Length: 186
Image (cartoon, rainbow, N blue to C red; front, side, top):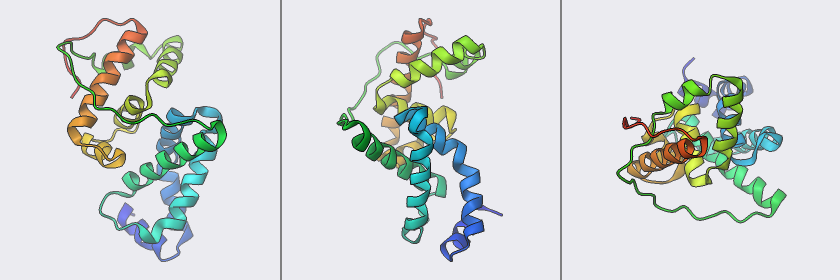
């Protein structure tokens, strides 16, 4: 069954249809929440996000995909969780710029990460990225979203989404001590 049909059924009260949507998006939502709050709290954030999505489903106008709408809820729930649990102030999003250096391709970093030690190092380095760079990177490569979808979820321009992913890849390469690749990730 396609996503929009599941949404239509869920809007009419079909809990089985909503459960199917939960199963489809759980892993991606978890990874996104984990990138914001860490693994200890990610599951709680995702549960809260799905509860909020169920409660707000009637307000979903289907102008974007269900996943795009849900990821926005996950981000909002994660930020609320941070404020409640850690009393943490969220840094404002800043515009990034690209220098003449090119970022390494994600595929190069991913190939290195195949070794278990590197997987841990990459995960820890990603967690150290500033949130405004970490979120677009996770959405792009872990959740495999387009730059257009990332821009919609984060409320930024598509060009800003591209620049933030580029900046995150550069910073990630520097943190991991990798040489810069002259090929740009597309």
